[in-house]
Length: 272
Image 1 (cartoon, helix red, strand yellow):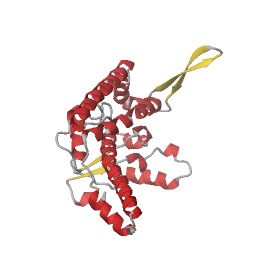
Image 2 (cartoon, helix red, strand yellow):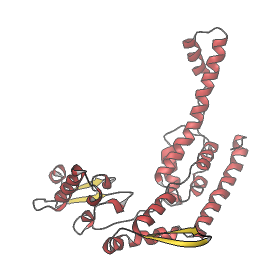
Image 3 (cartoon, helix red, strand yellow):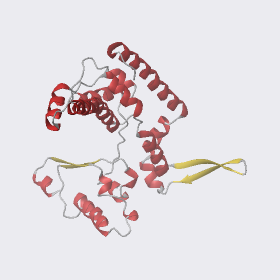
């Protein structure tokens, strides 16, 4: 904060703000964490704080874990929900991460984006990473196999490894690798949606007792004022988690993967 005040106009951005601004009522025995929250409050709008021309922003995946005092007027008073990336953004994110790696030409990013509906940005990066490991593993095991073949012929291990590395080249990432990675990777968002509903709204569970269904409703521990602050977020989550939306998203993913697999068969002459 001191450095920001000396370099105005300035933006201070705290990622994962719940790590240093977590709820003090949940930090029993962690005095240092309570002190961190108190210091953060003081720096933002303390009596001696002069944050003119300093914009303070923060991000978190668990807004319900941020101390309520930090969300009051004059601090982080406005909460903005950033939904999962749309189809255009997903294609751009996949392309951005993939462009740093060796690729075959004509990767169908639009179809890959369509197959990753309801995926978070971090999921998309993980898909690219997983796709990249496939040719790497092929090359790694190919080198091992060649090395063993050379050693069986009486060649020294060091020389065998060196020769194997020259003969086995790592191929570029293909559409098939992306399809394989997407088929294996589940979105991290549905569990997050359930956690958000549990923390902000109310959780409904169906239990069977003596052969009869009973609905158990667990209310959020948040007060009415806190719930009001997250009303828009809860509405967006409920809208996305309607049963018909889940069926539609699943259908789109599987249908798009079928199209992608046909493309792989035609272009790469292999099944994934």
